[in-house]
Length: 139
Image 1 (cartoon, rainbow, N blue to C red):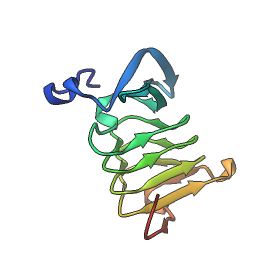
Image 2: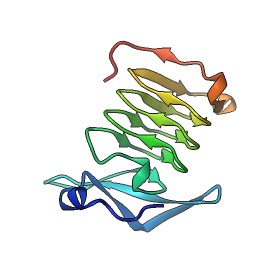
Image 3: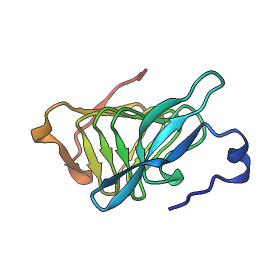
Image 4: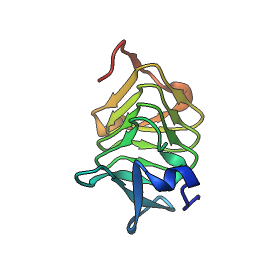
């Protein structure tokens, strides 16, 4: 896990991790995301390290969402609610992972893919078995 921002990002980070607000989750230590702006700080979801959420663009992890291991949220993507993204999953280019969804394995979501599993009984989705709804415009 990388605990340092690179030199450019450390001057004006989009977010920081709150090292004093951690969560032990399935053998991983996750930290609360705090989004920085000029007026106020906004709490986000939980990530394991800076390698899980890009400092660029509008991507966010919100609510009680968790992103860890080698998973990455980038570009203008959002992982929110109770969603859980881990393994080698990449969420990028306007993709959305919402609700009570759990994605893992080797998967890349992009180009406006929208996944939401509202039913906790149908929660675990393995990468080869993913059913997705493609939408032209997301948010």
